[in-house]
Image (cartoon, rainbow over all chains, first blue to last red; front, side, top):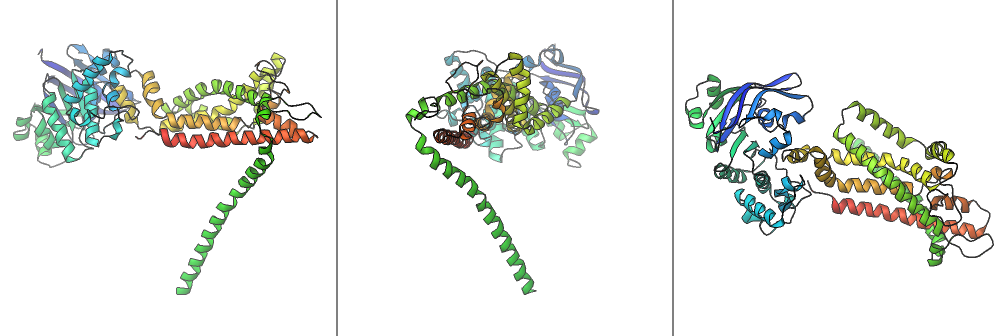
Length: 252
Length: 281
């Protein structure tokens, strides 16, 4: 159990009266890639956004139940601290358009007003960009605006920005749905390298992607966690009929 | 059938001709005003004109330094009042568009924008000039800042509303507290738009006469005290243009020229800034 990073038990979330996440119980282990899949509107993104408490930022959104980061209850921690520990990468690349590539990487420090020596910052920038497989491409243009990069590069910049904070967990909300196939495969490559140091939770629409990148897969349907198992097991011999129907394309 | 099409084409041509003609026509009054003021005013302007106070009747020379400095001081003071208030109110309106407070305060902003400037002057007269017992630059600045507010608020609100919500989410997901998200990400990204709103509001109030008539009043001498009456460019133009003396008329023309140039330059700058500093999202 000590390897469990994020665990939920009987966790529920609502938008107003709309019950979108129902009694989810799950335990996510350290240094794994977890794919969360399911049809549109099944609550997978909402669940993801609950983990770093981004869900509650939407007016009318509420959550109930237990959700833990290690042994700490996420919903009694300060949300700011939760978001230090749990990074996030969004559907569309969203680098800060007013900041350079360099400043984008250390945005988590600069925007929070954390003072740091220039040399330390240089180290973080190089390390994070290297981990995000972007260093070679941008090392000569670190002081250009981040928005000059291509979509795939921007997304890797956003990954570097999340890594720079050295979080425990990184959440990905359909991170490749706005990217072309080549950028997609470079981001997918990254997942394999990142799991050495981080735990990744990836929401995806794309079943092939889930099969390619993840160690374990969670299948959500109508707000419920239907099945959570090793990815191989899930794609070859799912135990629930709904999972089987989804994987074989009976509905989407 | 062919004849019908011919008639239709002719109608379209006539319509197109009409709108082109009218679009051209509306530029004429502006050009006439510009040319006339330049012709009358440009000859008045020289170093002496800019650095001296108006001369008494019968004396040659004299300038508008009291009005230049007065206008400058009052614009700065109204900006100090109106920019922070307007910006923060605009931020609230763009951040919470669906609250009751936003609805009513937005409504008030729209109404305030429509209030005639002379009414603003009267209100400030009763609220500030009367209790203090004297006309003052301070009361003039307050009247002008009330004129500035709606423009600053609306331009801030509209600029910030165009920013994608993903930008805010990016900052929040890094654990940045809300006030820093606004001040370090949202406002800098909308900076060009906010600044152009501020500059347009300055261009608007610099030529306002009515709110100053019973607040800053006017002063034929150079004064930098904000508790005393102070001259301003539009008020100087009003006083001297309605006087019966030719020298004073010339002074008014010169001042009109300076005022016009200032507004023109401010507008051109605003256009340049929005183009140059606009952030590519």
